[in-house]
Image (cartoon, rainbow, N blue to C red):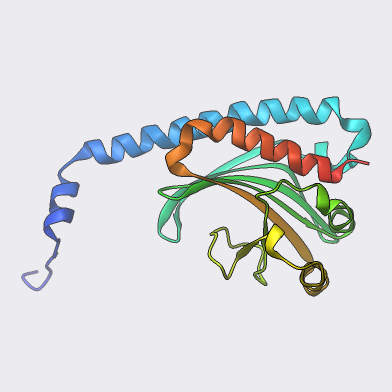
Length: 198
């Protein structure tokens, strides 16, 4: 057993002796989950009020809140609503909190939903980012994943839309502005819903 050792840096030693760090983190995550729960209730009401103008699939699944610890080694919380993941078509609005980074609200579509969003894309908010990554499952806002929609030439937008089976649009709020998160997420949700309306 003498060969088994643990090496901790001074900062790590200090942290493992302080339960308040984890307790505070857990409390913050709990608050984010509660906020997402309140947002999901508002959004369910919104969809019920606008059913006649939205694709019927949007109300088939209830909201889902999930969480994890290791998106690029940091905790996250996600609300998916609506959430349609059928073999031929995807429609998801993802509300994401990524620890130390941002809140985002993302519209991810494929199939017939993609066609509708591409047709209405000029209704997108000014600060909309377009995913340029081959995979829809990355969430960071690095230049290899997102670009501002307003900076893309129409031919480049067409090329991206034709190259990928999906379109993913996103809005971002730095986590330092957390007090604006509820209104930011709800406004983003409404903006994405507008792209799906007839």
